Length: 225
Ligand SMILES: C[S@@+](CC[C@H](N)C(=O)[O-])C[C@H]1O[C@@H](n2cnc3c(N)ncnc32)[C@H](O)[C@@H]1O
Image 1 (cartoon, rainbow, N blue to C red):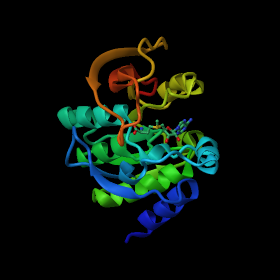
Image 2 (cartoon, protein in one colour; image 1 turned 30 degrees about the horizontal axis):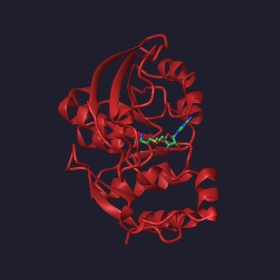
Image 3 (spheres, rainbow, N blue to C red; image 1 turned 90 degrees about the horizontal axis):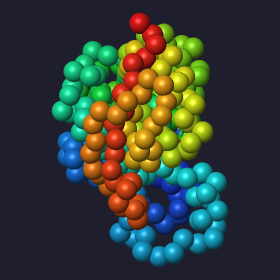
């Protein structure tokens, strides 16, 4: 077993000691596989300790969110958006958008997530999909080092409304942005406009509300030329 997968299982067991990861093909992009939570042995209530740990550090990375799936499908259908580009996947989680960008010809791909466990997840999933990507756990440090980011991808990062002001920062540091989101239906941020939509379900299934299966893709021009 690869070291990153061993590390990932170790981290998962910190929050959920009896949970397992399962290699999961994505329904909209079956060529893309991820290590996700196996919900087949989770048919019991969480213990109070598990609830505490999950709230303290939610393991977003062991789910694949609807927006990441729609973003990967969009990249497969429109590979020219990533071809030969330097791409950052902001809020990468499992790394689904980063993996799609690398598969469809990006020159370099950097998966960026503030959660160190998400970075381990991106590493394990990059290995699973036989692609090479780079990693960053701090977007502001990354933009100090990288002056030539062509495209920033962001999928389902607006669950935290504190990230909305960051959308303007993203624009300042790249040439273009694609953002997929299932929570904010009428984004009102200068420069961003919706241009496509799709439907997908978080995996393993989590959402009780159909509205969160409806994903909107927004685009913005970056302010770097
Ligand atoms: C709901 S998950 C989405 C993951 C993935 N993009 C997908 O679609 O499956 C959101 C991710 O964004 C990350 N995140 C949230 N705010 C962030 C920030 N300010 N900088 C970097 N990552 C962030 C979280 O740690 C989490 O992994």
